[in-house]
Image (cartoon, rainbow, N blue to C red):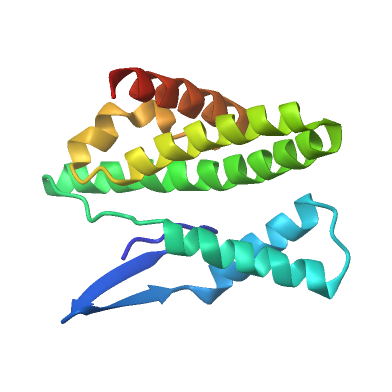
Length: 164
């Protein structure tokens, strides 16, 4: 299992048909707190919702074991960890964009949801990469600036949709 700072860290172990997922509780609480604060929440009920959302993110995130030489895996792990830290901020940015769009009108909300789906699809595609060399080839996604990463993921997601 690789250290990922303030991001969730998953380790999936096969045990027959059951899968056990070890999750660092501190990271889930940190993520929930970030969502809670960024949305301007003030009540315990709102924190409970943020905590449910953080758990939902963990369940959706599947992090692959990397394959390659020892040096490639070390470098790719560092790149992926940086990406995950940046993507954590992108999710906060998406939540903020969704809240603002919801306050405007239905069309703004629909467009924002569409963009969020494209960005999340691109991120999931990156997280599914198993080869360390693929992470090295996509190293330009390893940024912690959420707006830059959001735009890069959106462009990548659009390219993937055209190819598919």
